[in-house]
Length: 415
Image (cartoon, helix red, strand yellow):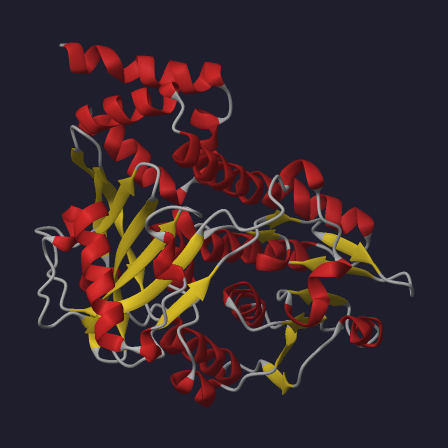
């Protein structure tokens, strides 16, 4: 008998899972409150970059509509402000790519529907889960909307924050010249905030995503509260002022006369994210086990861009486990967690560590940045490991590991 899987939520996790399962003739129904044609009129959803390993999964799913060789980027520029600013670069072994999710998500939905996936366009609340679970061999929840996140217990030991750690101002812009190599720029203004610049394909071609991670109470926090719609010119002037002061490696490539939102006033997003890590399964009152996937399990701040990438990875692992098993109970969830948790949990821990380290700037972290800025080999390793957060966490997870990594590259600098 053909397996029947219900998926609540049509983000990267749910759609990658659905596409994977349809490749193996599994019956899939996705529940979402948004149709593909509605995306073009929405406010910016996020500024997600897909790492090379995620693009590889898209190739395997036959949904790589925008090849990275043409639309992607090839490394990271880094800028660390201070009395003696540091500028350096790290290569990616294979290009990564960012596409406006108002283009990307409806493309995935149409591909899934064309391959036999079914969609039910309706909101699903926590009260609906028990009834839905009776209709499928397994129900997978991939969205925290409508209090669905409360169904999965938060793990306090992996959720150290109770409020947002950054005041976010995120947008798609035009008027920013590309660097000599098309690349992400990660700029750090000590005590004030971080900026991630991402070359991004949007409705009118290539644009620039600016992810401003402003420290709460800092000189940059005003950017998260100043509204573009109230006075576009005043907002843009404020952006230019703050970028020039805190993120000069990006500001120096801006043409003030052309600088504006890329498409419309919908291209900006402001607010904050409360990081949280939850159990990957829950047992309903009817005894059925349901699985949490994507943001429902791990909600991370976007400072390292790990959210959608670990969601795609976890979706692939879940798909393989669905194929390998016929009973979807607590023991199934143990098999699943054994395979997916290392990457998802390491991405969460690395992100939370980075938020804290960039706020407190302990001496050992400053020493790391100094070595990183002077060792191209270390910078290349650090940059490519954005693909592999478990490898990155191997480096940062304890003072001993952190110190050993720095000591590995320090002699090459002295030489």
